[in-house]
Picture (cartoon, helix red, strand yellow):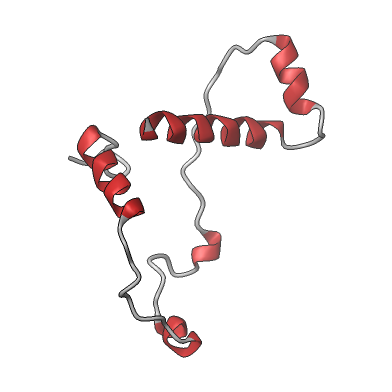
Length: 94
């Protein structure tokens, strides 16, 4: 099953598959040389330019939370996104 953005849906089956991959023993895999690694082609023509799809949303947060996010300076929305992503990944791993 796919979403409209062609990304797989994160259901229990997909999470189990990812967990299994994380704990798999890869010690029997051959080590790639730098020359072999250079031959790999990225999925995107320039993988450095890949960015996840961002959506504009309106969210109501407590004023003290916003002030805390803004304390280090610019980039509070990026920090909020990183915190939410970490919480999402931790929730999916439980």
